[in-house]
Image 1 (spheres, rainbow, N blue to C red):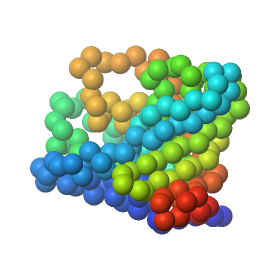
Image 2: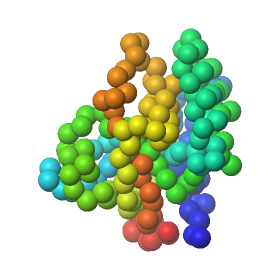
Image 3: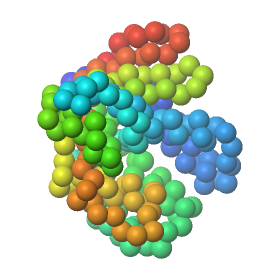
Image 4: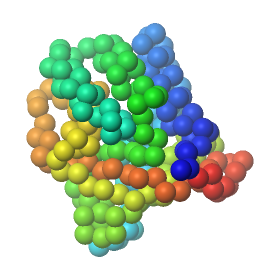
Length: 199
């Protein structure tokens, strides 16, 4: 079985964890904002709504064998009073745990249910995820897509969103399906590589 290249894991996971550690130390500067481009990727689809690109928050999900126990902890965390520093610590201790991460899959929530939704619900279940971090780092992931409107993947994606963003009023999760992106190919599109396939 092929493994996701370490260079992409460092970019999309390790460097993201370092940003959270930096936030915990109270260091907020421009590097934090630039670093969040690892979270906000362009999701590119085609189908009945036409060729479309949409910026969405994406992240890895835990392996199946860890998912149920992680969800129990996430449910408890959502009951706690919101404190950004405590949330960051929870993410480091319980979510961004390397041994628990399935690096072959990414998740996202569908908050708008417009063009991306129409393309994926009615068309071929495929998408390209494009990451770009200035000044010149870029990765392109070609994926098969599953849509989840209930179950563990759906709950994990909605829980993670609300743990971090914590809306003032409870959201109706029934309105926010989750996408599970199964990575099939990865290209390094950075300035020094220009589209070299690494996976």
